[in-house]
Length: 357
Image (cartoon, rainbow, N blue to C red):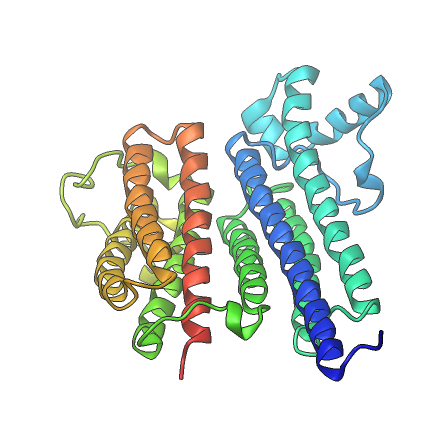
């Protein structure tokens, strides 16, 4: 029986919808892998494992030491850097293997993400499952992923010669790049839906700019958090709500030049991170309350509740992490929480963007 024009159109439409769904699932899976990468990267930093591999071998480095001689050679290379001499001098081979496997796992996961992105991208592209609209976005995501690998080595290289730790500037750059890639994956995947699949939100124009401001502040807070981590500023001034005996300490921005204190002075770095948390909390409370009222009956309501709850939880975990002088488990939960907040904010921002008039 010959299909009618309407039936043929319906079949084409179903195939297009199925292709879009497959691409969305792929992008969300890559975002999940990037999320895992941030978790492993955080654990690598918190266990001081990031400098255990002193060379960048994008291909050959996928193979770990397989013999006693190879392990001894790798350990000897580590002994040549300042971190070993000044921090870990006297560690044995088994202790070295512990930090080595964390860093190797981090790099290996990066390689896997590259393959998990490139191979399906090639398949979707060659089989016509990518629209002309999404092709350049996918290429940008692929480029950013490759760039992130280079930024990661640039970060590690900063701790191999004159320092016992990586540069806080490069650490912050590495984390921000990962956060941008993660948010971009969610943004592109969320937007690659049929028009009737997208949730509706009344007065989206009214909320778009406020949510964009909140999203920018969340990204800035992640950057400031990386500065805290990179300078170990969280292990100082472990009281709350007062800091050095007052809410606003006297010696803020006391360096020369003053602006450099925001990046290198422990007190100023931690103070900025605290203050922006309060700002985000206030903006989120006002913006989300208004959004909750407008979108009470539609699909943005659960996202609104989730984002508000996550921000409050993140602030509480941050305070507890500070008071307990940055235990590994809480510090990792705090970093992971920031990425979850970013994910939720990105979803809401995308939905508001799609509903603008």
